[in-house]
Length: 473
Image 1 (cartoon, rainbow, N blue to C red):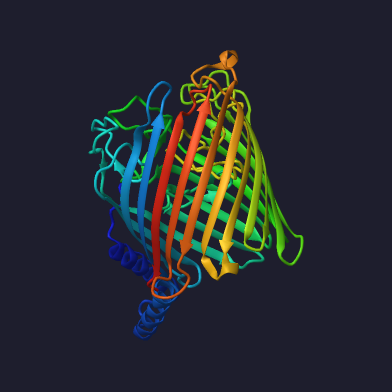
Image 2 (cartoon, rainbow, N blue to C red):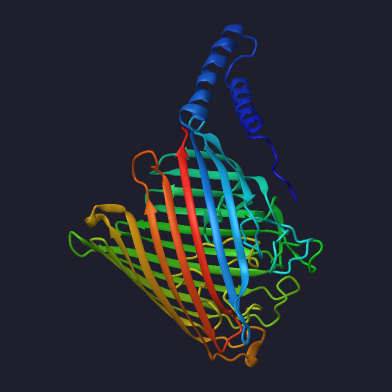
C-alpha cells in the first residue's frame, strides 16, 4: 500500500523540471551555448504559462454536521452517527506544458470537531479501537492526506483527440467513477478517452482505491474494510477495469459501459437521457437507466450459484418557472447477491466507486434491495420570482414494495414481503454575490421506515452543511 505524502511544492517543481530537461535535450544541440540559453528562457516561459498562468487553484472549506438514529424492532431509537467535521482542501489544476502534459493535485485536512458517535464515512476510521456506538467515538480521527496526484495529457482537438490521466486519479468512464465524500474518492490507475466529435470511447484501469475515511490508497478486496489486518480475512481483487462509449445527442446523451473486477464481478450499463423544450418556460428531462451484473463464481466472490442481476429505472422531471417536479420508478433483481441488494460496483462497497444513474433514490436509501420495486415523487421550488434566487426548498417521498424479507436468506429461501418508505426535505441557500459569494448552506432532514424486512431498520437523519469555495487563481 502506498501512502501519497509528497509535499505539493516539491512534486510540482519535480514535474516541471523533468519536462523542461526532456524537451531541451530532445530538440537542441547540447554543445551550442547560445541554443542552451535561448532554450532555457523559452522552456521557462512555457512552464510558467502551463503551471501558473493557465493553472487554477481553488481553496475549499466544508463544515459537515450529521445526526442519525436507528430503531430496531422492539427497541427505542439509538444514535447511529453523530458527526461534526471541518474540511479544508486545496485543488490545483495546471494547464498543459507545450499544450500536451500537465498535472492535478488535491490535498485536504478533515478535522474532528467535538465528540462523534459511530462511523461517519467522513473522518479517518481506526479499526483497531472499540466503538460501543453510544459514547464519544475515539475510532474517528483527524486526518491530512493527498487525495489526487495525477499526470494528465491531451493530443489533437475536439474533432479527433485523446485525453488521459494517470497516477492517484479520478476515474469517470464505463462503469467506474469517483464519487465524493467531502473530498473526491480516487484510484491508483489510469483513464484514457478518444474523442471524435460527439462520440467518445475510453478505457480505465485501477488496482487501489482511497475514500475519505482512509489515509492511504489500499488494495481492493472482497471485504468491505479493504483488508484491514485486524478485521475478517479478505481476498485481494487484483484490479478493476472498464470500457465505455458515449454519444452526445443534440438534447441528450447515450452512455454505455462494460466492466470487470478480476475474479469477482462483471457489470454493464446503458443510460439514455433526453430533454424537450415544451415551451419557453417549460422543459422536460427524461432518463432511462439499465445496469446488469453477474458475480464470477469462486473463492474471491464466494458466490457459487451466480445469476445475472439487474437494476432498471425510469425518471423524468419537468421544470417550469421556479418549480421542478420529479417522478421515477425502479425495479431490482439481485437473487445471488450475498448482501441482499444490487451491487453496482466491481468490488464490495468501500473498495471502489461506480457510475450509476439511479432514479428512485432517497437521501438515506437507494431502494435497491433484491426484489424491490420503488416509486419516487418530488418537487423543488426556487424563490427567484420572489426576489430571492438564493433560496430553494424541496420535498420528496419514496415507496418500495416486494423488498427482500431476510437479507441473510439465500436462493429459494428468499421471500419478498417487505415494504419501505421515506420522506426527504431540503432547504438550500446560496450566496450569489457580495462578500459571502461562494458560501452555500444546505439542510437535509430525512425519515425512513421499513416493515417486514431486516434489510434496513427505521432511521431519522439530519445533515447540515456549510461549504465555501474561493478561486485563489
